[in-house]
Length: 111
Length: 114
Image (tube, rainbow over all chains, first blue to last red; front, side, top):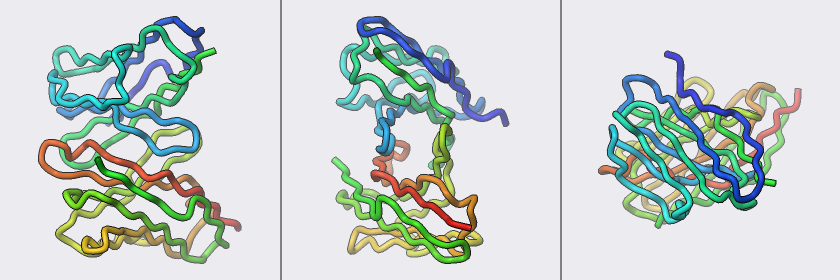
């Protein structure tokens, strides 16, 4: 069990640039989730996939955010035209049942 | 939507003491209540969870209690050790197709002094 893997672990970008994060879930898990965590707060739900289908998106996910999970395996989260308010830790999790297994996160800093 | 309140925000105890963290939730449809431990620079790790059909669950030094009528649940850590120092989050989720859509509390920074 290699766990949930996220890449990159850290990303520093300038305002207005696009960034993309990748998540590789635990191989047999059919559900994949994206959460966002800002400093001193609990994670906030963004979106989730069951296999390749994106089943729900939070209102936090503006139209600058897009997530995909082609072929029901890895997932990408893209943020277009980044803003300073996008600075946060982006967490990916996967599950087969109730228990969510989180990755180490991708920390985004927008200058 | 669901709202989860967690208290206290910081908790400092001596090694060997017990620690208790409390959470309340607002959505009566919630029926899954996990607790996560997050160490610096790492993702949250599940330490224990409880579903609405039971009132208490224990795993070694960790226990969780649930009061569905009052909409609150608590984490109890006994015989605390310095390695228990971390941020702890409670969360709640409804069942059905939303069972992975967790609403988290604000977190409790637990410090265990040797």
